[in-house]
Length: 459
Image (cartoon, rainbow, N blue to C red; front, side):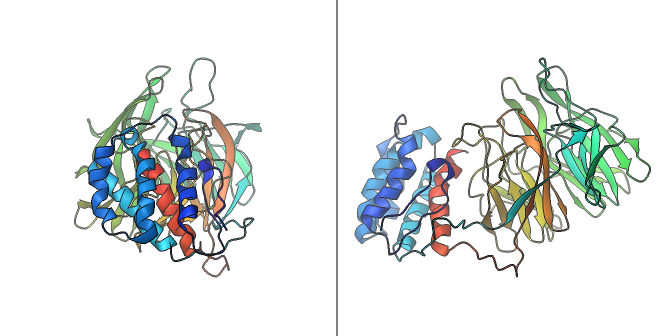
């Protein structure tokens, strides 16, 4: 029977009762590419050069089908401005997937969701009993309390005001309360927790209604006393916001980020600089620059490697799929890691064991909101990606913490730019002995093969 497909904006799986033939392959290709075919143009010569080596390795029905694929992909290349390397990689991946799919596929009931994990919600963010949406804030966990720091507030008719308000949610009592405000009003603050204290080291502060500039203002908060202590500012020239902030022992690492952003014209000053701060010695250190500028990236630590996942460069539409790794021992960067299945920036990220989770993000060309629904994790132990159930409410510009194995994502934006929500979403990954089955191999191949074009097109 022919495969059944969901709408192209949320392609997830297909079902079949027997190995696919040429007609079924063609149907998949046509349905996948249909949204793009009406108004895109490209160069046949470029594709022919890049495709030739791959075609020579194919045979039979798959090789015949390449003629169809070639025609379809003609319309995509100029739009993506792909170079020969990425074109070859894209075509090679498609062909590899077709060869694997030709061996057959596993049957999936159409009413079965192949992606594991459970989404839920906590009480919405509130201030004095009133819902209080937030975006571009930071989140921190201390004990049983989740703190939401700074960020921007809903449009007031003039601007998206940057706030210094700090609220905390108690996971035991289920209540929101306000704490001492930050000494500075910041959005995109670089926040970390060390020894039960919350540090912010720089961020973006409002210059006017639409322009935010990086500042080096820094401070530390003690939840035990509900007091902030001002720290020396970041070194001149190292000020940053939206860094992929992580902690190892007493050291806070701040790779990449933004020097400024103009929200009216979607202009962003993405940087590749990399600094660290030792909270014990109060010493700042300049580290080797990232391989490329990144802001709004996912991040995580596994072993002695600091990972930078996706993100964007110089604008919220310029999302990337790269994975960078910084070896904390050798102090060197590496880039030979499996890229994100779908390029995303503005993600909320959290680490559980070897899994670095990335939720949501901004820059999705498949949807009117331009907000990604995906929850995907990079397994640093195996250099592979795992798909989980999509976010019920896709968001960007949020943050995440892990509480007793559950990922908590407070607030965020639900439309590209700034449309804020007070909703707090939680995600419970499946436990190893939970009985939840992993995605069938052929469906995983399908998602890699037919998710790749969007990953590349959103670069």
